[in-house]
Length: 98
Image 1 (cartoon, rainbow, N blue to C red):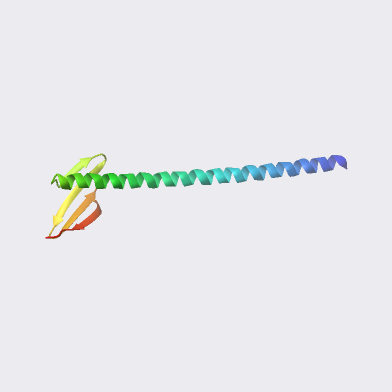
Image 2: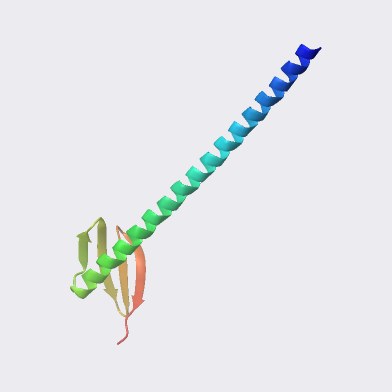
């Protein structure tokens, strides 16, 4: 009978350990995936900022196209709009005042 109780206690300890390890693994994977998402968003924001900086350089230099630092900026001027695109995707429209 006493041997059965010892095995029962060991089984409960093993079960608690397995549950603890599973919980720890879940928490670590959740934190790591959250960090990866934050890093991806930071990278996207940095690329947007760099594209806007290159667009500003192009406007100040009176260029319609400028490709540097991974940005391919094209500036189109229509009537009273200035359209700025990066890699073919419109990133900004500015209304020109006459």
